[in-house]
Length: 412
Image (cartoon, rainbow, N blue to C red; front, side, top):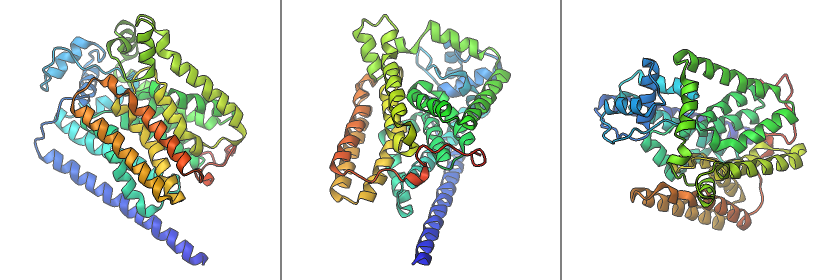
């Protein structure tokens, strides 16, 4: 009996390894195919990263609208104003790497990398949450069909990096590799406000459980990114601070979140309503962590942390940002597969389809971005409803022992 189980586990792992090889080979072929053809890429958000990287290497100001507009016009940008990069300076080393290539080549390389990130994250999540190995490719397809994934891929967004940072953190914690977990989490710094509440929980765990190796991973990664940024462009941090104080994106754009609604309801001239949801969310996370600190399990807590952080973000929450909701979606799919309720699986599939198709229709109709405010709450409500329909079978605890303090010998 035990031999049969061991054989099944070995076969499942072999199929998983084969799937990774197939996906990697297909993406490499896609990259070569794109590079071999003169693809006319749409000038969406990727142009802001490429232009910012080009200015960084040339000693210009990547946070100056006039300089960005001039650089973007070299690749065919025709609008009267530039699409600005509001990401912190830690994004510039990555942007500079792509700016070493012509725009079309850089875009042809970035798309397969985005696909690889999303596919790896979906499959890794599925396995971590106890999904069957044989269904891993199916869940990868689900992740690709999620509307925010489609939009992020189309626009060349960096939001898949946030997904990678979150999933890499969770995967590393599950293997008791705290240093790697801290390093992975630093990837979310490209849009820190989107996952602020996750950072609150992490810092509480670092201090409360004395997980200093996780803190060391963060410090080393942030230090490396900061040094790389300074070496590339010493004035980047000052230029970013000037942009954030002189032309705040919260005033320029009405992002689809509760924070924007509160600011506009308060007259639109004050800043404090914009940060109220994050502040209240941080207090809630701190209280919840304190109550559950002796039995805190990252795999069980991570989904609601990610959802709440997206709902309470002070800025952003754009459709392409919600690619991070692949985490709770895959986690719930794995749970429902373990429950085995056909009714719940059908209901979950229907809810996913309705949300993603409705969002795609609105995107195709070019409606104002603020109208996508319903997406995050819809996912949250859907997951709560599925929990009521088919309760039970939490995330497998073997991946993150409750309340366990990582031993120094195993932390790396």
